[in-house]
Image (cartoon, helix red, strand yellow):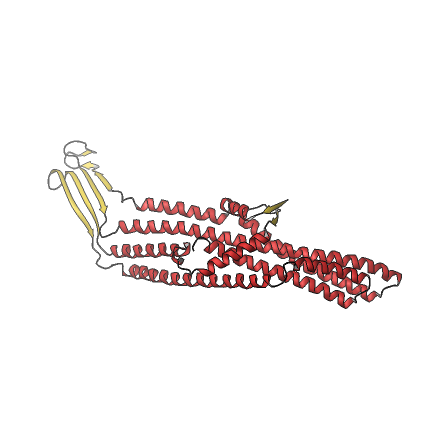
Amino acid sequence: MGSRLTFCQADSLLALRNHNLRSARLDISAAEGQLAQSSRYDNPTMSVMYNIYNPTNHRWFDPGRTGEVDVQFSQPFAIGGQHAEQVKQDAALLRASRNQLTVTHRDLRSEVHVAMVDLYYQQRQAAVYDEEIASAEKILAAYREQTAKGNIAAIETQRIATMVYQLRKSRADLILEASALQAQLRQLLVLPADDSITVDIDEKEAIDAASRLYLAVAAKPAASIEAMPEMQLIGSQVEAAEHALRWERSQSLPQMSVQGEYDKNGSIGHNFFAVGLSVAVPLWNRNRGNIRKAQAAIEQAAVDADRQRNAIMQQRKADLDIVGQYLKQLAEPTPTLDSDLTEMLHAAEKQFMSRHISLVEFVDLYGNYRDTMLARLDAKSKMLQAAERLRIVWGGVQ
């Protein structure tokens, strides 16, 4: 079972299936529930006392005029932001959850696209080994036949057999790396474990798009960095920390509640009604420890914002350098270099089979072919990986 995967298809699968995104969406639902809950006021408290035995008339559970019923009512109320600051904090945390979803989605897209580019060129490099192995095996079969007839020295045949073994070993290592990338993509996109992935990339269009992107990003300063989702996330966290500080300060104020009481036969008289105010005086505990903790959280958020800002700019500079350098490197040789190298490989095969070149020259030509082809594919891979990071991070922030 196999799948051909494009960037668009991967983005759709990621948005639909990825576990981290699904979890981040549930975080938003939880934050919405927390905001709805914190917006509600405390419930009133009511207590009712009914006398079991009436000492006046010696009756049990006396419902008459001399029976005793005591009803008390209490309703807490907030002052100085004890309720409002909690609501504002949870509203900021909800915005932070939404920003976190955006950051998570963008980072996962970048991870998927980079892995796809890497896998595409790993598979291309494996094809280079396949072509070289096929050519070398053809020569090895012919040399073994000639060695058996006594026309060619066994040491030359053994040297070619050794080269074929080394090529197969290098290819096997490459296939294992490609398998690890496929496993990473299957995990991110929640694909079946037995699904073999082949990445579909239009290389020419991708390189042209990378060149245009490089010019566009490099020509403009990163003036919109504060609009990036990471900075929006930290901004929401800072806002939540500020409201948390105000809420902690409000907790140093008295805790107050309105009280009411009805006493059917109290000590003051029949059908006694009273209202009052309950105040918890902050005498020993003025919440100073929690206030200091909230102040530290604000300072930490400012440090995080500065660190994140610096990391974004460093990554931007590194990716621009990678794309710029490899675009220059890929533009230097002739555009037909890949096809020229393939022709050189087949020519070397024919020349060696005809004994027009020595074994040393043959091995050297094969090595040059392989090293050059792999180097060009590696340059394209690194360049397009950096270009995908730039496109996903900076494509909409210019």
